[in-house]
Image 1 (cartoon, rainbow, N blue to C red):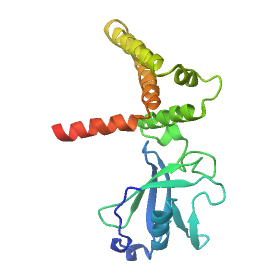
Image 2 (image 1 turned 90 degrees about the vertical axis):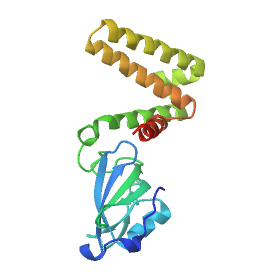
Image 3 (image 1 turned 45 degrees about the horizontal axis):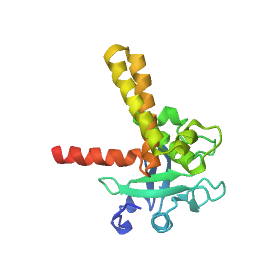
Image 4 (image 1 turned 60 degrees about the vertical axis):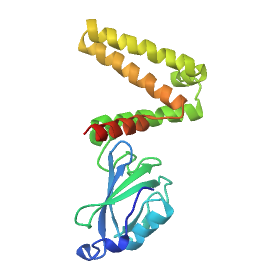
Length: 209
């Protein structure tokens, strides 16, 4: 877990021992839920790696998913500038909301940042690689091997360039979507992901900036 949080440095007094904790998907940025933590809940989250809140209605610690199994695996914990609000980056295991949606604020497509779907796509492709479900086109690609996947990326790259040169926006977007999908498969076949590409881009930007 990425954190250097010192619970003793937080302003627990302002909220009578409770701090609001906003939970977002650690990859897509989707806001999943809002809860409250006391110092013990934060310490347990940091220790066990499962997001734990203080339930005001039950007056006790409550680990998300303790009954449903839909836990939130904590990946990072950050504090705001006033040290009185927490931002939790988490990996959800199942729907976060008791209504069955990924977020307590609505369906995924309503609250997910526009580019956040790339993280969801990357996760689906990784799952296909691990499980290899029968009848899946992605499974066929993985079982065809690296060279076949690389060939598809090359084909889609050429088709994207041609669409940009001689076709309309709709055709270009369609070919670009095919290219991004096949590139995601290629990365996963090598044990990499879109987050690794973003990391390289961010480092280049930092150096040039």
